[in-house]
Structure formats: C-alpha cells, structure tokens
Length: 188
Image 1 (tube, rainbow, N blue to C red):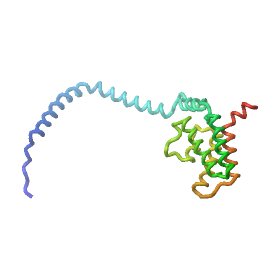
Image 2 (cartoon, rainbow, N blue to C red):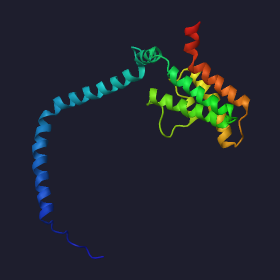
Image 3 (spheres, rainbow, N blue to C red):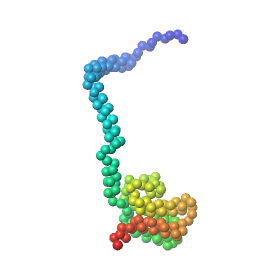
C-alpha cells in the first residue's frame, strides 16, 4: 500500500485545536501552580467520602432503630367501622341468596378499597391480594383476615370452584374479627 500523506485539517478542526491549546495553557498554569494545595483538598474529600460511607454502614446512633420505633408508634390501620358494617350487610345479603362467591369477592374488593383510601402508598393498580397481605405495615390481624379472604376468592376465581357456606362464614368471620374488633373492645 502506498503511504498517504497526512490530511490537512479543515477550518473547524483548526479552530478546536486552537481552543484546546488556549485552555491547556490557561488551566495547566492554574492547576500547575495550585497543585500542592489542590492535592490536599482532593485527599480530604476522598477521606471524607470514605468516612461518610462507613458512618452510613455502621449507623452508630441507631437511626434505623429510631425509624422502626416511629413505625411502631403509627396507629394500626383499620377500616372505618361504619363502612365495615355496611360491607358486611351487603355481603350478608348476597350470601343469603346463596351467592357465596360474590359475597366473598365483595369482601375482598371493598377491603382493598378501604385499604387504598386509608393508605394509598400501600395499594398500586398492579397489586395482587397476595402482595397486599404481605405489606409490612399491615397489622397481623389484618394480614390474617386478608389472607383468609384472598385464598377463598382465588379458589373461586382461578380454580373455578364454587364456594360453600363454610368458606363464606370463614371469610366473614375473619373480616368481622379484624374490622370490628374495636367495637368489641369498646363494648367490653
């Protein structure tokens, strides 16, 4: 292959080379004279960054524990008692007609609706009943009731098995114990 002579730079390439030379002279002179100070500033910033990461990992003041305590102090979520009683009345009406699938599904749908209105950060449009029953902030009583109801609804919808009175009664009892427990404590 014949050796080709280097190509002459065009106007734009010459302009950028000229700008580069000016910047390298200006910044080189600036950083060259300031390097003894700049090296210590960079070293201090590096040490500060490492110390901050260690602080975040070790957490000497127990910030995580304080956050957990604050979560525990948050009042337990429960559906509104009036809404819970109305829901049970509607579901009982369906169950009296022998529509146990629909009654149990109504319990689940309205439970999700109550949860969504009280705590919108818990419920997303793509949330499943199983995911909702595993929410960390959900009280254990709510988790158990929600799981019992969700299992029956899943069996009804996905296994295509009709629910019987015993299934409905278990779901209703679980919801009533959870949602109306404050009424029971208040009466006692």
